Length: 571
Image (cartoon, rainbow, N blue to C red; front, side, top):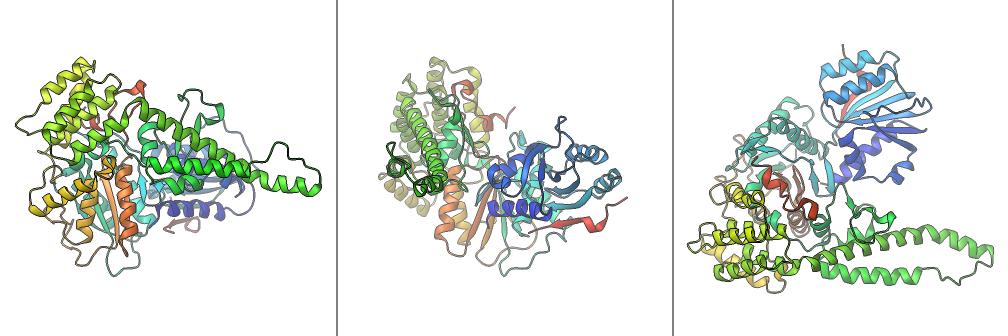
């Protein structure tokens, strides 16, 4: 199961279906993101797509020499824009692809608008999600909850995105959901309704062991998104922010113009692909090796081009050298900025205390360390709030809790009342009362022993002691020990055999730490394939302009077309 490959195949098929000749790719805001994370502009240019336009742009020119490939979400707005486009076509012929199921009435409206018969093909290609990594996808949705219920408009969108993933991967799964979350149950029921309604689409070849969709709620593990990360991709997202594989470096001191925005894509950047899951220390070593390799291949300034063969060799090697030069500049800049932020914000010291709060059970030591960091003027306001949140989640019912004193420390530090209220909101959102799992306090002897040994292992690297709850949940699921009382099946059937294909979806967003856990499980569990997705991919906003903007915490509170040209495609 590879979500990146699934989306790439859809896009390749669209371009292939349109045949030879110059093309324009017509998209909306969301499909632009969907395409950009799996294909670079230069890659698509090689496929004779020379122009990229938005369907809602009012400034497009008539270009009858171009074929139009339309890749759009089936929204009312897009359908209306497409109707207006077909009434006054700007291109010679249209190949229309919707990223999800479109209604018959909308197809009829498009057919009636196509008076000039410029539409050659209409299909459904189910790429209605952001393929972040081969085993990780996002719907780029925030604010999905209103209290502990769905934001009404976002349940259908989440259902569409999740069913699109299932169709892209050709899976008709059994569904298990987190019992403690009404949102998880409602999403499961909504997905089940679509599978039943569109049963022909989900009529895939039966496998010996049915695939499984596991729906979880972020509130069951509010700790993981609060922790600093130390692997490359996770650090970049946490400290700099990854938005559809792009990083905004414009605020980096002394940054050059060409590096103000850079793209990090494992599909097109070998160094990034090889270092995604390595820790910060290893990345530093590999950056040094990359630079040394670059220096060896760098043309010497005194090198003279004295013959035709010298010139030919230089021209042949120049593109590769230029690409390597860009890679070196980009990663040296990114790693340098990460290093600066780690030093400036005392993040190693902060992270050590975060890990202690998440993994150890020494209240006296934790209390002293949190208070000490709150009194350090170089610890940022956001880091201070996060530390108190972690303390509140970890020791919310401890008899010697010093939470009132820590809240006063935040006040003395100048943290606004609004941001201080986030601590209470966090406990209301992900505290013991609402969790369906033993996130903090393992009760049985086996769990206590495992926690003890996890702590021992952490001595080797105090910054990576924590394992997300998702890792334990998946381990129990694969071993057939995940309790039906915590994760019941939707419907009467249940799996008797070890699951092989598992799609996990986290309402409220997944994290790169959880993606790393899934990556490692895929490597170490033969015969098991896991894909992780979420309504978004979390990080904690850390720039001074958005200090303490813990959005994920706040969001919880506050006539027919000709049949010959219409078909549905699950590649």
